[in-house]
Amino acid sequence: MAWIPRGLRDGVVTSRYPRRADGYGPDFFGHVEVAPGSGDDREAVSAAAGACPTRAIALDGGRVRLDRGRCVLCGRCVALAPDTFRADPGFETAAFSRRALVVPDGEGDDAEVADARMKLARRVRVLRRSVNVRHVDAGSDGSEEWEIAALTNPVYDIQRLGVFFTASPKHADLLLVTGAGSAGMQGPLRQTYDLMPHPKVVIAVGVDTSSGGMVGESYAARGGVGQFVPVDVFVPGSPPSPFGILHGIVEAVGILGSRRHVGAEAPATRTAK
Image 1 (cartoon, rainbow, N blue to C red):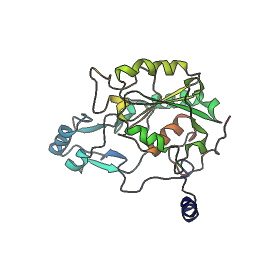
Image 2: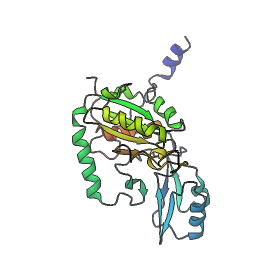
Image 3: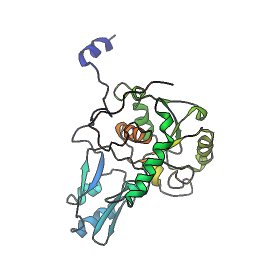
Image 4: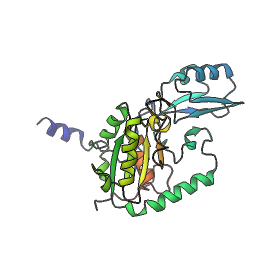
């Protein structure tokens, strides 16, 4: 019965995100930022690129590019080239295309990104009241699964947004994929996708799903899941935090609408169908 006095003492612990800004504090390692105009210290940048275990850093002429779809957040680049790379506590890094994970200026054609957002918004318009999620592990190391499981605890309480997990792909609106696309899961993953009714949305969670992560492309995996199912939203991180995954979900199903920064009021909490 210890939970009764603890609950009275602590009060409501559930996050208000995305209605209100929230996060993990300034010391959280959410993602790596590339400093504007970086690349002057080519020796340090070259050392960081050489130390990167997934070859996520590229020096193109005088410009430095970081592929968040490969970055496993090891922090080596931040330690070796602190004037170029810095750790940032932000978690809102979900992207609507694989190209957009390359920073800075990874989104390329703004019109293309806007078109992808508009098409996805039209598809998910009928899902405003509730969203059922089917999760498939396509060769994960298990770290993303812990973060996904946390979404149902009292702190994140994803059900308050009308998002629920389901065991049947026939009842699912959203496919949450983790893992590098191992050989044994390529068929089941595609079968799950095919069984889902339209409209359906696919979210790739973690760098393994984008690029294979530390495994990359090998005899056992194909370097991500994009060639087996059409991915609508990529959530980088190794693993991404629960808030990062939640951001990808609310972006995909339109809970945030056209807002790009949390701070204003979001639509009211949705109820079950």
